[in-house]
Image 1 (cartoon, rainbow, N blue to C red):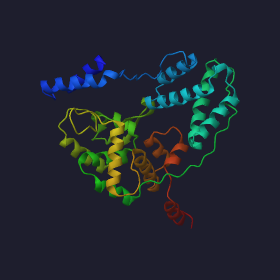
Image 2: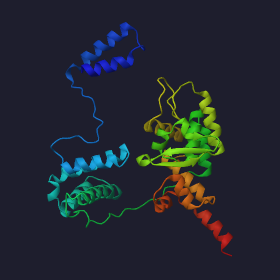
Image 3: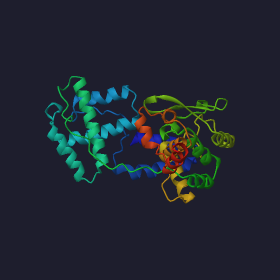
Image 4: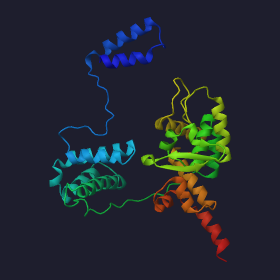
Length: 329
């Protein structure tokens, strides 16, 4: 409690008068007297005796390989759940144990898509165990992928995109929308983006994606105009491209950026949730519909596999119809 109170009061220093500080500290001590407050751990691997040693090593190895913190947390959450359900040493886990685990997940109301994601995490872990010689075979190898319906993600229409633009209440919101649309970047890449990563001369935007992988995307005219206008309104010295609106100025977080877009979507009246990946999908679809080669779109989006790009970039039926009439004569 003492450490928590000290850190909390330090953050308030300069914002309250000495008398107010004393009152807050007194109230804080009285309120928290019956609570045990511990600092939340940010470690990916917590070393205890309830998980297999090879599992700990697996997570550390994936961290070294450069997987994002979000991906590592997803792996850990799924594998923690798996080991708690199976409750066996790794060497004794069978194919049927994994099947029973997946069935238990289905009984909890998870969709087939979610269950297949859990299957893939478990399969990947046991594959690693075999390669590292912890096991002779992968008990998940005989479990086939779980089929699920892939609903086509509908991009923003031209009218919807314009409604979103019109609903922006300041240059920060407009710059954010235009930068997402121009570059096709992920929200995690937007969070990492610094001013020095943007070159207005060459129109290049240097993005750092999954596993710190670097790629180059580009500014269109609208993104450049509104980004410059936004930066002229800023009074901070922060080097992030998008920052918070209140002191102390910091780079906007993933949650803050998602919240900005969510509220913007509601104001726009488009009738659907507006989120970063929807704009990214719209970028890909529009680029292909207007004639950009799919391999070039793949480079802009930073996809390793072309199949992934084809999932995101759904060519509209109207474009197919137009090109059929144009080329099949």
